[in-house]
Length: 477
Ligand code: NAD
Image (cartoon, rainbow, N blue to C red; front, side, top):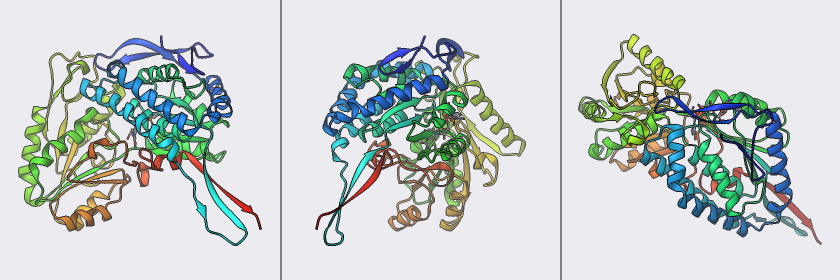
């Protein structure tokens, strides 16, 4: 039985209600977690506030950094244990789960080093004044985390918030809590004071809603779907609470005829099959210049046919999707595509060892998808790649920008001037030239434009979002 983690104590929800935890690889329940509500959120916010006003505020920035560094080391020592928890909970292949644990450790390391480097400014002003700015923490920050990369998103969001001097209340997804509950225990072992990190589990519309509404929450970091992002903004607006939103994407991977196709091919494939396509920055559209459309589509099809899907522990190219409703969502997109005459060019294979009760989906390559079709416009959040052809630079810019999202864009070309023109013309938070994701470096600010959200997490930039600026003007003459 999994318990909430409040003020460094494992506690049951006030109501005593629980939820089953399912293994996506076989669809079976193997544990339970707390189905918390507003009372549990209130206890967590009170614990966080007491910590913020007490031991946390008395710590120097350097000491906060030392704690975060200790946690980074602890996560590294427990990396395989954390990866195994997240693997079972989320259906991640072993390599992906271990990469996520390593990323979590790296986030804490990065933010450990950043704590004591967050400076204000002095501002030249009128004679007789000294004016300067302080970067102050918001206080108690709320973090609503999705199920696709719990450890990574916890690292970038909670890591940044703690580094900036906040105390945190975290609501993980009801589908993916186990690794984060364990990380909070490890933080307590490292000496984080009670209340610095609190985890409260349960349904979004119950406990997530209670977190967003709580008057003691001073800032909300939300990572999840655009529709829930809208609700969070509306709820937060009632009390003018600042929000950072990391929402979805329909990210284009653009391949010009002069590209290094050998280098591009594995990256194009991985960008849509990593984590079974359940990645906000998944490269779910591939836009190919007419002259190389057929040959590149043929190579993509060969690569897709070799992909294998199976139980997470088999560590194949893809594991299962997170839950049955997600599987159904992908099926609905594919059956709409089929009904509208969109060709399935290639599919991978679900291995015989995959239990029928698991939530598997073969990676699927679709050709000549019309730009206004829902499979080219909406986030499938599964391993479905929509291929489209383009005539020239103006055409591809129009196609690439023709969705409501703007998270990531990839561009493959050897032409340097075009690389920079494309980077300017694409409406997205990140543009990757001759790569996709730059290895996910924690140093790189990340976020979206349009319906992909606003505000930035990751990198030093995140610390500005997790602080508020105070201007102090001293009259002395
Ligand atoms: P979701 O929006 O359903 O849930 C996200 C979180 O919000 C969960 O913890 C959920 O319990 C909670 N929630 C749900 N309803 C709520 C409510 N009414 N009030 C408060 N909280 C509520 O999203 P998901 O299905 O967990 O994750 C997939 C989505 O997240 C995709 O759209 C994906 O693109 C996006 N995502 C974005 C990023 C990014 O950085 N941009 C990263 C990961 C995932």
